[in-house]
Length: 394
Ligand code: F3S
Image (cartoon, rainbow, N blue to C red; front, side, top):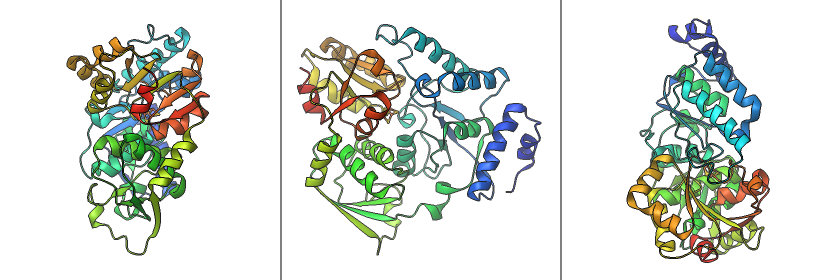
């Protein structure tokens, strides 16, 4: 692989031990995947943030890097942490867990990483441009940036994303190259869509079938960015879809040749059956919305439904700290709290220890959340649309 003079210096250890170790990792990755060179990254998003996911070994590894003076070279955001970093105590997060989570955040901060723990960095001040090369790792954020924004990223693991952040580059392979961004299967949708959860169900269904192929949707109604993020998140969870196209709606879609591709037909009937597949519980003991992290519009949709009402069961709306600040200003946080719910920042239902907080059945409107909750959090799932979930909790 071609390396610049500066990159050779990193490889020779002239930029410090951590940069050398991480650059070697990038070179190894590049060699495995046949990269011709490194490319500078406009931004990075690092996963492996929750203490629940990385435990003591991950925490000690990050502290070691921070203590050795590692500093990031690109704008770097974080995936959700294991708890709301400000309200963890009043929300009942375990103290020992919180202590370790704070140590992890301190190590990241020391390295110059922005402590905005979110899977929607593009809603929180880290918006890549069309065709910009980035190194992101959370699967729904990867899908959104590749598909809806038209940026270029592979689905990085935590270590390779951290390496890109510290070294400022990533190997040029996979979805960074135009030739690997060609649709492989057409998904013909013939269904009406009423709720964002329909997009989650469709995504779950398609992800299962296409696995890591690049799907091209035809027949999808005019969809907003919240709906597309729900679709991409579910496909990335049930399959490994990191890029999709929607005819007339996403960048480059209308430039793609789809003649002769295998076609999958999806009707309302299959979407409805997917709701049944994803349901493993009868009645939820908590409802958690905001997977991927809620936009301000999605929070306002919750506000419309709970204003002036009293919820009988806990309701969390997960989002980033920045969107929560905007929700505070709009009075949304107060309205949701008066109804008995919470806007929870920095974390989500999958990476927080909800199973240790006494919850057994979680209600979600997210195909991704429904896919992961049984395995990651030992939860039964009630998968439904926002109206039914909130109605059931009033
Ligand atoms: Fe985000 Fe957590 Fe869902 S990371 S996409 S809210 S599982």
